Image (cartoon, rainbow, N blue to C red; front, side, top):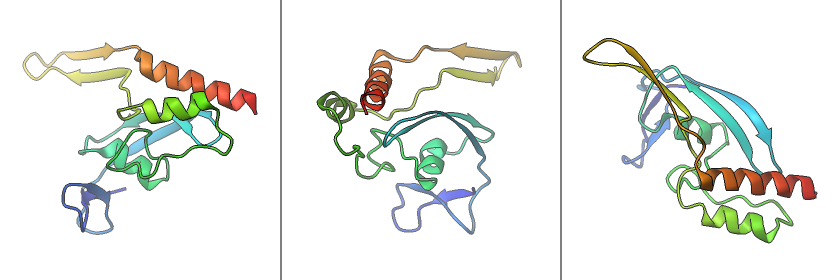
Length: 134
């Protein structure tokens, strides 16, 4: 969906019907939990906040995203561990496990990988445990 400045809040980006720049985000569902979904995303374009804007537009806001995420979602009867994990996740639940680019000086394609950080792994484990407890 095309993106541009939010029509009211100029600090934010938004999916816009007119005047936006092309923005293409591909996503694939990896896991479904009771009130959350883990997705894998691949970008064709690189607009500011693109992943956050497109996922929020599709009603999949990121955990820990105060700008586009809205109110924190907790499933009914959430375990104390899940409530603590969601409230304690103090950043966007977004991780680039693989990044590829063409080096601007050499023209060489380079690719970098990074494992899922501990806090993110813990969040996934708590979501899985909550799903299995139901």
